[in-house]
Length: 479
Image 1: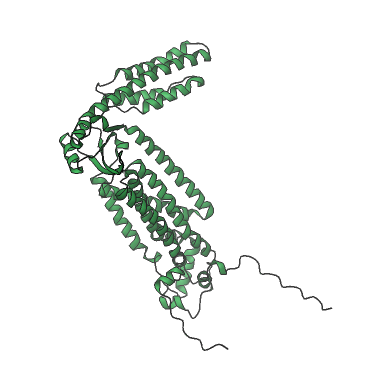
Image 2: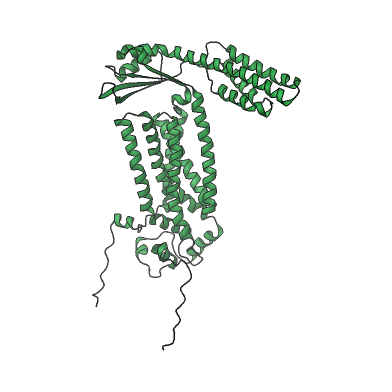
């Protein structure tokens, strides 16, 4: 025999959050979330408009020096670089294993190129590149011509002369080759002539590369001498690397291609798996995340490097996963809405979001913790610049992605769906029956006339029948 029923005490906030029993009106307050995102985006755009995006030397071209620090400090190096005429310089202090055991301090100095090719040289490089692409040569020689084009595309300058002689020789070959091939009979002979021309042009490209490296080395000699004097290290032990902007351009172009392919693929997948409006909301949230992170980089003048680009592409995958968690529950609960329901689509989406809120937060937190450790260890313990750049972009991106999947994507989806005739009619019918669009706390706990659709949603997918009811067993005769 059971005792009298006693009123159950309501769960605490954390316990209700854990069980998906919260009733926070997240979707209904979409204006507040959109306004907050709008302010952040405007601040980011203002940062881009005023200060611009700061690109690393992989995109702008420049020189990297690394030397054992000795008694020199970061401030000493910065002052010396400013005296030499280098304005935008990054100086990092690194800790590495020393040659005699223990840890040793190193200084890493990055400076953009102080000289650039003349306009005449830039125009000549562009003209030669387009000319190589436009050559009509036999297929047997096309690979050689393409290789020359790719190698020439990696040449940026600077050069001491206005237009280097090897570049003029390349253009001369390009201009003469069509007429030369036209005068030759037979595809084999034409291919042989084209391959010989490609070999001559490749030799000229190699000369251009040698001139480019020599000019960059000359520009950096003054810094090498100054670093050697400050640190007490022989100039021969100062490591110097020159970086041309072409590699950064290739990374940027490939990243743009990867982003376009990713967005197309994810749009197709979500449209097939769920629906087009969910795909639209997802893509808008992704652009929101990208713009937020890039805006923060512009405001705080963080340099954008290839590691940053890779982190941004990685961040998109995490954002997609977090949004799919919410949309999967919304899609499941949408099947329960009908003309007799007392819930609008917005209320159903909000209830679905509350049900998976804890799961979404857990996903974001467990993703952020290892990235935070990478950022802290890379920046403050190991002093590895690449880890710092990768971790910072990914950390900011995951924060923005966690926010957008909850406060941007789902409210936007509800706005799009409420425009559909069936859900617009449902909202009108609910208004005629006298049910409000916002559920109060008392109604959320108990209703005199409960909505069976809401009851099924609150019960969760596990309680819903997944197939036809079992047939009753036949009663056999007793023997």
